Image (cartoon, rainbow, N blue to C red; front, side, top):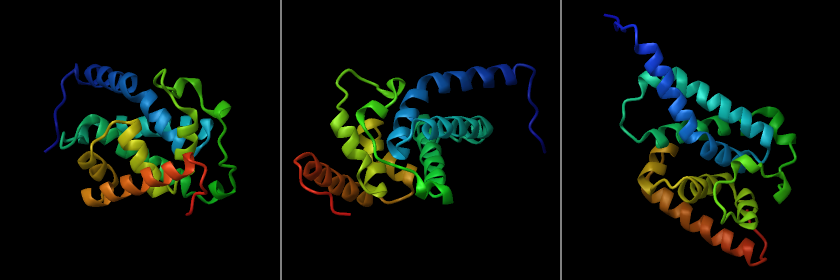
Length: 174
């Protein structure tokens, strides 16, 4: 049995998609940039994320918030880019000048902290990004990363400890 759609389904779907893009484009760009350390790659990841969102809108079941669902798609997209064969040759050093203006979300933005976050191992980086930069709760992060809540809590603690060491001038041990 196929779903029957009315004549107003496509405009409503397109309007809803535009709302999602307007609401989440900047947070997704910011997270993708800090994860990938490259403006162009982050923009590509955002486009790919929203293409996937558009294709899967009808499959969204509402078991999590829209933000959690979109961030999970974005993290998976960044993960795919990060693990592509050519990415390992990419220069991942970040300077404050490299952070795109359109990705900055608040006036209280701390460049030193953002750069320190990019130096964390990816498992710690992703929980820090999702918790502190995207405002997701531990249970939502667990859903996004498909790990237990206790793993998220442990990674948050280790991430905070490593950030503290980095910002105090001690070397990051990986």
